Amino acid sequence: MLIPLLWFIVGLTALISGAELLVRYVSKIALKLNIPKVIIALTVVAFGTSAPELAVSVQATIDGQTDLMLGNIIGSNISNTLLILGLSALFIPLKVHKNLIKSDAPIMIGITILLFFLSYNGALGFWECLLLVVLLMIYLLFLARQKGEISIPDVKPDKDETGNMVVNVVLTITGFILLITGARWLISSSLIFAEMAGVSELIIGLTVVAIGTSLPEIVISLVAAYRGERDIAVGNVIGSNILNMLAVLGFAGIFSSELIPIQDALLSFDFPVLIAASIACLPIFYTGHKVVRWEGGIFLMFYFAYIFYLFLSSTDHRFLDVFINIMVFFVIPVAIITILYHTITEWNWRRKYAKIFQPKDEG
Image 1 (tube, rainbow, N blue to C red):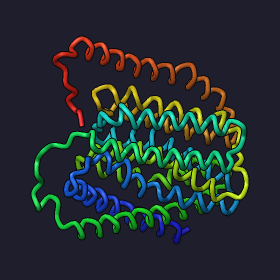
Image 2: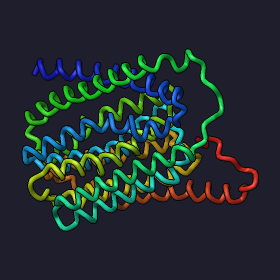
Image 3: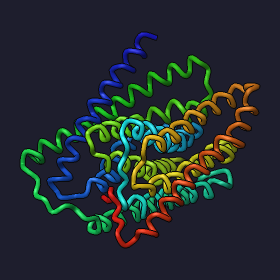
C-alpha cells in the first residue's frame, strides 16, 4: 500500500510540473509563430493530453480488454466535459472563443452522435474505425484552414514574452513528458487501489482509468485558467474529446484483430450521458461566451451524480431506484429549464440589441 501511495504522490507532482511548463511555453510558441492559442489548444495541447488515452486504449485492444478501452474513452470524454469544465469554471470563469461555439463544439456533438449510431449494432469493426481516422484527417485540414479565419491582435510581442524558440520547444516537450509520465504513475497506483476494492473492469475503465487518463486535461485546464490562458483551458477539453473519439478509438480499432464489442450498459446509459453533456456545452458556451461558476457547478454536480449512479448500479444498492427518480423527475428538469431560460434570455437580448451589441469575450 505504501509504494502505490508514493507513486501516486510522485505522479501528481510530475503532472502539475508538466502542466505548468506546457501551458507557459506552448503559449510562447503560439505568440512567436502568430498562431491563435485556441488552435494550439485544439491540436498540439489536445494531442499531447490525449496521449495517455491512446496508449491505454491501444494496449487494452492488444490485450483483448475492450471493455476497459471503450469505458476509458467514453468515461474520459464525460470527465473532460463535466469534471474538467466544472472544476475549471468554479476556479475561474472560462472564456469561450467564438469559433468553438460556431464549429468545434458542434463538430464534437456530431461525432459523439455518429459514434453512438456506429456502435448501435453492438460492435465496432475495422471499417468503422477507419472512417473515424478519415474524419480525423478532415478535421485537421479544417483546423488548418480555420487558422487563417481567426483574427489575431496586430501587436508584436516583446522578445521577453516569447523567449528563444529552441528553449520553448524543449521545455514544451519536457512538459509533455512529465505530464504523460505522471499520469501513467497515477493510473498504475489508482488501478491497484481499485482492484483491491474489487471493482469490475468496466467500472474501472469508466472511472479510475478515465479520470486517470484525463488528469493531463484536468491539470492543463486548471493551470491554463489560473494563468489567464482561458482559450487553452476550454479548447483543450473540446479538442481532447474530438481526438479521443477519432484518433484514440480510430487507431485502437485499426490495431484490433477482431470486432470490438459494445456493452449494452454503454449504449443504454454512458453514451446518452456523454451526448447530453456534449449538447449542454452549446447553450452554456453561448451565454456570454463564458462558462461561469454556477454553470461549472451544474457540470460538476452532474459528474458526481454520474459517479454515484455507477457506484449504486455496480453494488445493486437499494437506493438506486430512488436516486434515479430524484435525478429524472427533479434535478435534470430543473437544470434543463435553468439553462434554457438563460440561453433564451441571452438570445432575445442579442436580437434586440443586435446593432449595438458586440460579444465582450469574442476571441
